[in-house]
Image (cartoon, rainbow over all chains, first blue to last red; front, side, top):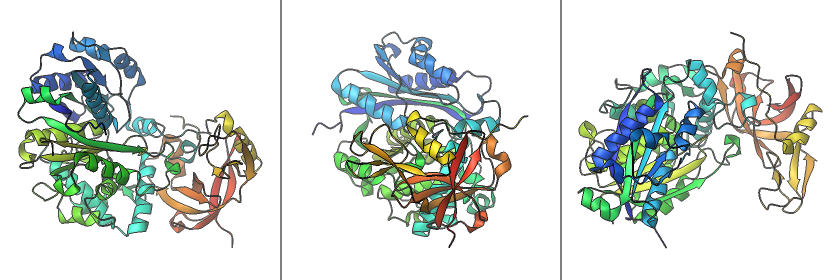
Amino acid sequence: MNSLKGKAAIVGIGEVPTGRHPDKACISFGMMAARQAIQDAGLKKDEIDFVIPTGVVYNNGVNNDLVTCRFVEELGLKGVKTNELVFAGGASGSCMLKTAASLVNSGVAKCVLCAHMEKLGTGVPTSQGVIDLFSTAGISQEWEVPYGQHYSTIAALATTRYQHETGTSDEALAAVCVSNRKWAELNPNAFFRNPLNIEEVLKSKILSTPLRAKQSNMLFDGGSAFIVTSAERARDLTERPVYVLGESSRVTHFVFSQEPDITRYGWADAAREAFAEAGLTPKDIDVAEIYDSYPIFQLIAFEELGFAERGQGGEVFLRGDTWPGGPKPTTTNGGMLSQGHTGAGGGVALVVEAARQLMGKAGERQVPRARFAVETGTGGTYMDSQVTILGTEIP
Amino acid sequence: MEKPKKPSPVVNPVARPFWDAAWEDQLILQKCTDCDRFIFYPRLFCPHCHSDNLTWERASGKGTVYSYTVVLNNPPSPFLDDVPYVVAIIRLEEGVQMLSNIVGCKPEEVRCDMPVEVIFEQRGGDFKLPMFQPMVK
């Protein structure tokens, strides 16, 4: 089998703090993150020969600029042969990474810059405007929008059925939010850094039963970037290349109500294949960067990937095993629940965080001796299940 | 600020017979005569076997609640006056799923796996939406 295992590596990362920056244009966030990533990789800017921006959600007009090479021009990159968007909603980080790794492995590209920028925090006039934007983005205007479906109801529907089938408590779901906050307290790029406890989560107002406000992400401005090159080049550039060791995925639906199992999705199959390609098991993983956006989706993926038995994951979060210092460090940037949601960027941030941990650059929240990480992403209404395994050595 | 109107379905022409039937208080589903499966939502051709041989059949209108939620806060603007309202995924007897609202009972009475049956509620001047209420014994 022709596998990507050990053929390509992340060699540079960049990220701007998630927040509200009304004084900056959207493209600025991507530019700052990209410059950081190029410097971090130790590359000359003109060595970048392939640029993959992902899409923005707040304003489709910006996507037209990105498609037509504005990002390359504003960055002043003179060696670029191709610029093209890879946009898969929240799965964009995983999808940019596998696309970049494939391009490098095939020889089509040498140094690929993948970048994200978003202005959902200050680019939409009102908070109701953001709710309304997200109540149609990726939701079927024929089969779901007329019934008042939006992202809170989608997370709530998954939570209701999952609790019905597994008996998982409200406290366990709140514990996912608490775990993510523990990490965000140590993350200077996170927006929500004050301590949070289970009682506060369960006292916050209900949006859609049983989902509460503090179990819901908030949308912000942000940007992040990473650079992918060949394994050989990576070894010249750094002592700790972050190799792509395995990846797999499943696309399961577009219309959320068409998903046959809203408590599982495609994670188990994707994870089995990704771990097999890497030659690793969940026990080998030092850091699990699991996509959240809502606690239910983080918990489901955590279990389906094999970090807990079905219905037992909540106990793992309640025990604090996933916290800083715990045996199963999980979503170590705080996730979208605490670092903040930046459209497609929530997933890109998790790729960047996985690489950051493996590079040993995670500062106060560094997981000691992290060698292997798993990163997950999912877009739209949890339309796909993307699993990527990364490591500093090739097993 | 003027409250936005409740959204009507943005219709794909292949689904026009579904909405026309709904206007007559009938729930119809496509069925593939080659692979013998019901199809929802309506498709240009069978998503299971790619056959063009699709018929429309009257559905029983009966199903169960796969999952549900009661919306209390922060809905999309057109639904601000509707809270609390129930959004649910219905599993129809024919083996397909659809999103809908549960009406005809208190929101707190809705449960997973509860039997429900279809009724139709008018939306704007041109549509009736299939909605579901607890099965009348």
